[in-house]
Amino acid sequence: ADTKVYRASTTAPVNIAVVKYWGKRDAKLNLPTNSSLSVTLSQDDLRTLTTAACSATFDGDSLTLNGELSDISGARTQACFRELRARRAAVEAANPALPKLSTLPLKIVSENNFPTAAGLASSAAGFAALVRAIANLYELPESPADLSLIARQGSGSACRSLFGGYVAWRMGSQDDGLDSKAELVAEASHWPQMRALILVVNAAKKDVPSTSGMQQTVATSGLFQQRINQVVPANMTLMEEAVRDKDFAKFAEVTMRDSNSFHACCADTYPPIFYMNDASRAAIRAVEAINAQAGKTVAAYTYDAGPNSVIYFLEEDAATVVGAFHEVLGAVGGWKDGAATLKSSAKIPEQTA
Ligand code: PMV
Image (cartoon, rainbow, N blue to C red; front, side, top):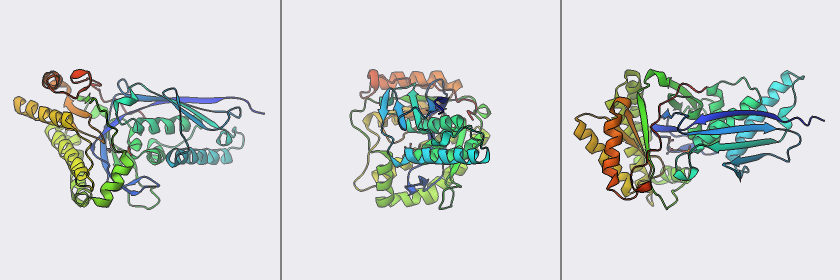
């Protein structure tokens, strides 16, 4: 019998949306109520490293995340395993000489180079790395866009981490989800001056998980209808123009407005959901003060489903923006280490595909 251990490794980057995905039209397939757009951060700063192995000698499928065995019985992880095995089985059927890897137990080992406890959206990099590692192990011919269809079923935002640079997730219109995938808007090299500063809040409280937060928003927020029908479609168009024209003021305004709109919908649910806290709001005020002081827009804030800030700025304004945050937030409580924590001054990477 074949006792060989087959193995492949890969990394996947974190992405932070500037037009947010919030709301599912199909929870099983992770089909969104709206398109979204993100910037992929540098893998030097934030990334997941994943090794996928398969062997007849393994006991069964397993996933170890940062040294701890993780539950893989959930429908999301199972969907990724099933989809990837089906594609490998198709390759094997066409090439009978190939080893039957699709039938072997999988052992996945994954490490983040940033603290998972920091509350940063790690599921995006996690599922993107898992899908690409298994796809590499299986030597699948699928393109990054094709793999994004699988990663999407693990975690919606993960589909955008299959590409570097500026990435759109097109919501699609089909019920089978085959047109709901990621697409490269622009390579990182198109606008290489973009930087991201991540401010980590000392959060004691656990946030509402994105899936239940979305469900509640879709079910109870009236404002949400306006967001998905008007606000997001307009923001997608404006954001693609801003990236195309390398117009930072426009990029920043759309980023901040879209974050505000998403959090307004959360506050509009019943009961309301609050992801931002006093420290988050202080950082918003700090961005406004920095921009007013500079006499132009040099910084943009955005918040996901938690209180941490991501601040986008251009390299030429690094001293102004990063310096000001240390000054302003040093006096404000609630930030990790008593002041703004520089998690990443991320250089946006080349396309990772
Ligand atoms: O990928 P999920 O299901 O964890 O949802 C992420 C949602 C946000 O991070 C808040 C927005 C986004 O587009 O990434």
